[in-house]
Structure formats: structure tokens, C-alpha cells
Amino acid sequence: MAEENIELLLIEDDDIYCELVRQMLGPGYIIYEAPTGNQGLELARMHQPDCILLDYRLPDIDGLQLLATLTEEDFPVVMLTVEESPEVIVQAMQREAQDYLVKGHISKTSLDQAIANAIEKAALKRDLEEKNRQIRDLASALTLAEQRERRRIAQLLHDEVQQMLYGIQLRANLIAQEAGPELQASIKDHLEQMERFIVQGIRVSRSLAVELSPPLLQDEGLAEAFEWLADQMKETHNLDLELDIRRDGHSLDEDLWLLVFQLVRELLFNVVKHAGVCQARLEMFEEDDYLVIRVQDEGVGFDVEAVKNKQGSEGGFGLYSVRERLGLFGGRLAMESSPGRGTQMTIFVPKAAHVRNSSPSTPRPRGEGSPVPSPSGRGSR
Ligand SMILES: Nc1ncnc2c1ncn2[C@@H]1O[C@H](COP(=O)(O)OP(=O)(O)OP(=O)(O)O)[C@@H](O)[C@H]1O
Ligand SMILES: [Mg+2]
Image (cartoon, rainbow, N blue to C red; front, top):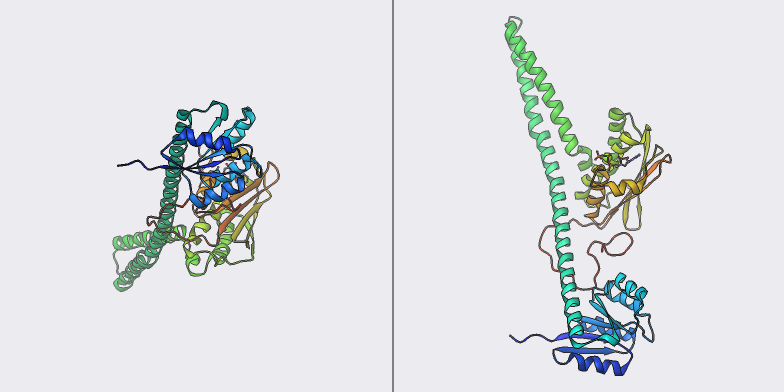
């Protein structure tokens, strides 16, 4: 099978040098030429070349600036220049140039090799990004499957198990009533013991159902579930939770409510465990395209950077898992705290966070950015 020609874009304002490169490369290449940076960018977008050779000094744009734009759009770029300054080389590498060739020292072999390497590295990078994206998709599908399963089990506990236990309780009471006062002492004992087990069983199954998925959440939504959570936190942990709910959260996909609820509960447990105060505040509002939930306390605070560095190793797992799970749906966690000055944890969930199915998706075309935009508007690279 005949090998395909490599499509190359040469962004270079020196005609003589263009001719030299052209002769040096010989057949096997289709070469587009652009004498200015702007024309280069236009040709790159139009022809989507396999590789770009970019001169550092251009008449209209700074070469490094153009390099950043091109690599941002996933083009493999080899810098080609008379500059030998280590500073420029470092800057080019920081802007993800695949290679850096100094004009005076180029041979056909070095040029061929640099181009081949740049193309191969770019293909590997695309592969890796695609695999990462597939892993993210899978992880978010698993998270959602877990949420649905939790709801299903909670429903089963409520509709089936608890109803059965109530049925048994009723029967036990009927046995006692119908046997009358002459009921043998030993049977009476057994019935009383049975009643205790049944009451315990009902209590355990109710709290398990609530733990898995608070009933209010499904029926009413996040705002009501947070009111219920405030009562729970007071009852079980003596935490006074002040609520400031300016949006009810219905703008968010229903499948994400339980996830958001769990994340907020994790933040509140942290207040109980670490802040050393009995009050906290929970706000819910919308900002731009995000549903925002903020948990705030005036407790002992902590060193955010130190905790971030320890996460996943010796540090706790709670905040790490909040961040990771949010990230799966394009959200993020902003942590503000310092020792002695309280803590503010803010969850941003994109209202458009659509719940993806785990169906195979097509690879992302070059230059489209990450499929899950981060709140700063940049891709997740
Ligand atoms: N509201 C808070 N006030 C003070 N310190 C906090 C607060 N929230 C988190 N921290 C600090 O951040 C650390 C990391 O929190 P994280 O939730 O990740 O772990 P953890 O609560 O220690 O353990 P885990 O959640 O895995 O049971 C905590 O150990 C604590 O030092
Ligand atoms: Mg925790």
C-alpha cells in the first residue's frame, strides 16, 4: 500500500528559507506555506495539517503567542528559528511545542525525524485524552447508576420490607389478643421478644432507607431536603443550620439531586467533626449557568493548600471525593479557609450538566475544547 503524503504547514516569512525546506524535505510531503502568522492560523484551520513548522520571528504576530494558539487547538508544532536562547526554548516547550529546531543546524534527517515525532506524540496525546474522557464518562455513568440503585433500594425498603414488618407486628398483636388472658407465660414471653425485634427491624430499615435516599428529596426537591437535613443535623449532632435558599434547585437534572445532597451532607459532617462550632450556614442560589451551594462556618478553619496536598494519600477522603464526583459532571468545589478564620465551601454545579449515558461517543474533533467545560471557560487540560 502506498504511504500517504504528510500534510505540512510552513509558517515562515523568508521565501529563500521556505524554498530550502521544501527542497530538503523532497517528496512525501504536501506543503502549505504562509508568510504571516495570521495567514498561518487561517491555513491551519482550513487544511488541518498533520504538522506545523513555525518560525519564531513573524512580521505580524509573536511566534510564541501563535504557538500557544496552535497547540491550544491541538496542532503538533515544531518551532523553527534562528534563536538559540535557552529562555526562548523553555518558553516554547512550556507552550507545548513538540520540538525546537535551530535553522542553521537542520538536515533532512533531523527535519523528517522531528516531524514524525511531533505527529506521533500528538496522536498519543489524542489517544490519551480520548481514554481519559471514556474513563470520565464511565465514572459518571457509575455514579448515576449508584444513585439510582440507592433510590431503588430505599423504595424497596419502604414499600416492601417495612410493610411486611408492620404486617408481622399486627399479626403478633392479634395472636396476643385472641388468645386472651389465659395465654401461657412462655408464649407471652416469645411474643414480647418478637415485638421488640420487629420494632428494631422497622427502625433499622427506616433509617437505612433515609440514609440511602431521603424520601423528601425525591418527592419535593433539594430545598425541602435541606430543611429536613437541618432538622436532622440539629437532632443528631446539635448543629444549628441556618438556611438561605434563594433557588429551589429544580433547574438541575433530577438525577443529580441525590449526588448534590450527599456532597452537602459531607461538608456539614466536616463542620461537625472539625470546625468546633455548633452553627453553620447553608446558601443555595444561581450564578450564571451554575447552581451554587455554599456551606459556611465560623470555626477553627484549616490550611487549604496543606489539605489539598495531602488528599488521596494520608489526608481524609471526604473533600477529595466531593471534588472528584463534582468534576465528573463539570462542577467544582471552591475551598476558602485559613486557621482561626472559619471555612467557606462552595459547590458549583452546571445547570446544563446533562446526565450522560454510557453509550460510545465519537472522538472529539481537533480544537473543540474539552467536552466538560470548567467554570473558568477553559478546557480541562
Ligand atoms: N469546616 C471545616 N473546619 C475545619 N477544618 C475542616 C473543615 N472541613 C474540612 N476541614 C479540614 O480538612 C481536612 C480534610 O477533610 P476531609 O473531609 O477530606 O477529611 P476528613 O473529614 O478528615 O475525613 P473523612 O471525610 O475521610 O472521614 C479535615 O481533616 C480537616 O482538617
Ligand atoms: Mg470529611
